[in-house]
Image 1 (cartoon, rainbow, N blue to C red):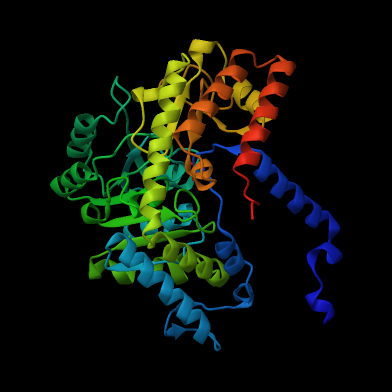
Image 2 (tube, rainbow, N blue to C red):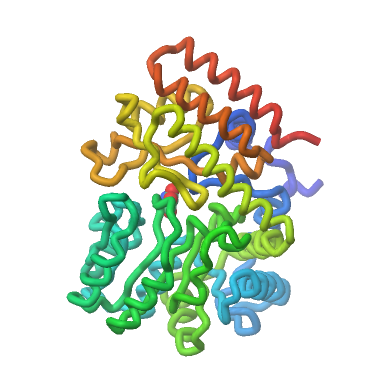
Length: 416
Ligand code: DSN
């Protein structure tokens, strides 16, 4: 064997060990982080391919490097599959992440100081939608909109603010919002005030691909997403649009505006993931994610916890822990000890600091990938309630951990 082809276990046992341990952690834990999923072996195979070696600055057919004939094929496959998946006229699959996709759109159409409207971070928005701690909030004048008392988007207040402030761009989409979003209404308001409408569908893109959540593409100038959440691809981003006039500014903004060489191995993996989303089974997967989330929310409610806005239309939910007298930090930690992986998350009007919080965010894409259905969601809700009723009781936590391991064994990722 050429020395350059020695396997990782021989070359670097420290990194190899960590990977083995992470594989075991994923096998034995219930992954309920709403933004995570379990990429298929085919996706990972493409991601670890020799395309990692290739520079391919430019776009298919117009590259600044030689030897791009195979890179052109995979990038064009990714583009064509993505366009077919969402019914868009143009797709850019080069953004390295969702944040970079959003940044590329802003960079293409906004100047520093321009007005940008987005859902506020504490009410479910994302750092890139105008948070003061992120570039989006520092570079642009941010006008956040929020939620009503029923914890759903306050569409009327959003429209009023847009009419008053005349923003250059309105962003819809969220990071911790469980309900359907009325993209059509956002678009009407944007057109009414002469703004562009950008949808960040990162959380929902896998559901949308399977017809289980409203498709924003017909109701937006530009749509961005990550590829690794409900879409179950490699970590990365993309941008969709249908108006030809937007093509040059967006292409130029991604490359050479913000990025150099595209990650061709990741683009190959994106092509694989988009191909899997086009299979008829994807619709069943997307529908099951939502059915599982509804079942989990209903049983947590039956166990005395409160679901923000009273339920979910998607893959995720925010759980208000105050009925149990625990905060998000304690809950996340105790659940970790029981092999249940979640993240603490602020709830609307949260009295706690963001590092403590009164809630946790849960999502069902990963457990649905393992093949779990509504019956298992009821089981999982019971385990969560058991732990959260006695987060400091090591015996209870240990018992739940064993039950979780029994469940993950029944839905093993390594089953042959
Ligand atoms: N950090 C991601 C999430 O967890 O929702 C969004 O980028």
